Image (cartoon, rainbow, N blue to C red; front, top):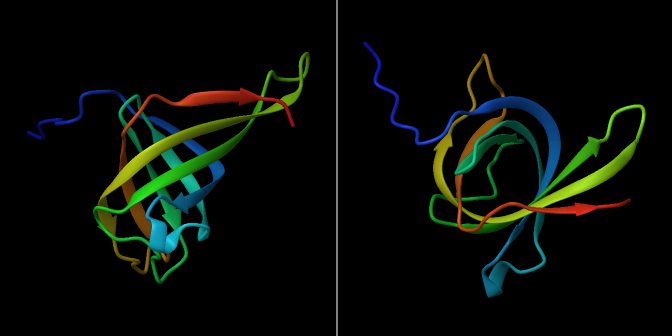
Length: 113
């Protein structure tokens, strides 16, 4: 039997994301990835190898969503500060690096283009 350790359920989703480093020596460095799942306490994304992040790195994430559907189309941005808690190396099945992060604050929504 597998015991689930997560505090919150995860939602599977595929969206582009951008990450920026919070540390002064890496400030301004930007990476791109693909969001794979998200919960209230963290998320998991893939990025091309070699991974530009390490466990413990503090990041700012920007996730672009197309919210509102056909009746009210628009773009929204989700922003959050987070900490890298786990890295999964590429494999034959998944050539991307897996990155798990925990949120250090609540997600903030920024509507508009």
